[in-house]
Length: 225
Image (tube, rainbow, N blue to C red; front, side, top):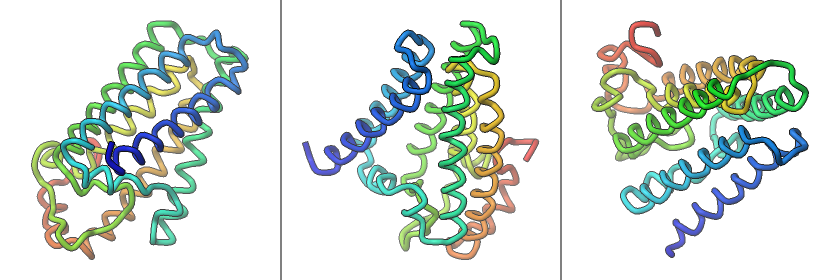
């Protein structure tokens, strides 16, 4: 096992442990099939993507290793990522507490539909990563980086964010909650804030990005925005 693979797997293992804690501690029960199914599907998708890209695009994995507010160099993005962390944690907490105390009635079919949305989101992220090896976890422009305008980038400028939003919308449903969609809405607003600031940075620092903005008008949803 090379160093990159080891670091990636250790990071994922820690994340899965943290995810289990944030799901099952507030639920205060192991008898939570929605939580178990979501946790297993999420972990399997994360590990599957990691194994694929460690083998086929290790440079992408390296670019994705350093993430979060402290990894960003710009003050605005540090603030944005801090807000993203808070709203993401709130999404899990509200969803799980909703399930525990029965604030909303979510059918088994709706939960399974939420799991399907999570997997669709992961597939969109997989397609995006295959097309763009420069899809780093932080906002930056590398010296050898070029504008990607093929694949999903020919349809929208931020396919990874679109895929992530699909995943986040599916998360509360998968966990048996309607109220969890409230912090998801806040998280969506933070993602919009991030991409608008990111586009300003790329237009200044990545050759050809301003022209790409003019040729591909849709940011997240073709025909809408």
